[in-house]
Amino acid sequence: MSRTSLVTVAAVLFACLAIAGTAEAAKTTLYVHGYSPLSVVPVGNTYDDWSSWGTINKAGGVNRKAVNWGGQDFISQTNGYVRNALDCFCTGDNWCYISTHSTGDSQVGYALSQYGNTLRNVKNTSTPGPNGVCQDVPNSSGRTTQTGWNIYWVTSAGGAGGGSELAGPGQIIFNNFITHQTVLEDLVPSHMRSLYDHNQTQSHWFYRFAGSNGVFSFGALPGEDDSVVAYHSAGGLSQSGHFCNNNPRWWDPTSWNCYELKGGTEAAGNGVAKWSYQYLWFRDNAGEYYHPPVTASQDSLLSVLRSMMNAYAW
Image (cartoon, rainbow, N blue to C red; front, top):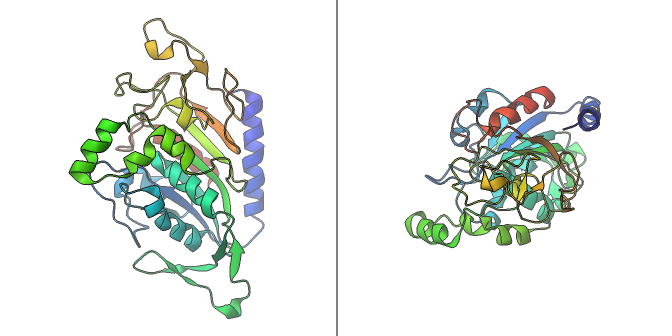
């Protein structure tokens, strides 16, 4: 990313932080996890349950809360858990930073597109019930409803808003037969890209992180990938396809016939635009970072995400 691009992004972020400092309000960093292949993540009032994030709860922003949606069922069926958290922590005088991984990107994108311009009841953040729903503020307190949520910005590491080619028919049939993991059907790129209007973020920016340590994808993903999600999805591009760093390598077929995924809001090398309000913050030029959130090791893409959240989500 060029120095000019970094300065531009920093200016946007610091402008947001300046706004945040002007009001007496609670600030919360919400973490929305991705697909869970092994077991269902507990839902409801589990905002302090970080089982799906490895050790990420040790760092990454002010007043961290985990948004647990189960990790396996359709987005349309589980998105209510995400909206409950947004209502709890991002209404009234309270504001949120949102950090997502993998399918968490799709969950937040779906919530903003489908419900981000709807009327929401202002909630009391100190009273989440067993189901994860917070109580409405008393009528005597003044404003009791608002349109959408108070969100500074969203970050997305290995974002699956464009789907993943690994969610192919064979895996869907096998996993549904064994564990009924229906979100894989959503994750087929053609399904995910038509599930909601990705341009409708209600003017909330998504800052994206794209890894390229695709050693475990065995060529099943187009272009560069982080072993689970390809650049076309992680980079927020409006079309799928083969997209790479600007460093073709003769020994690496994934880098052949690729178009460059460019930083910031720039279109890709073949002119494919990013969706609205998408900014590529980090592109893994050296092929160092992979997708899974299993540890806090430096080769996980989430280590880069944590650094940004520590620096700016406060």
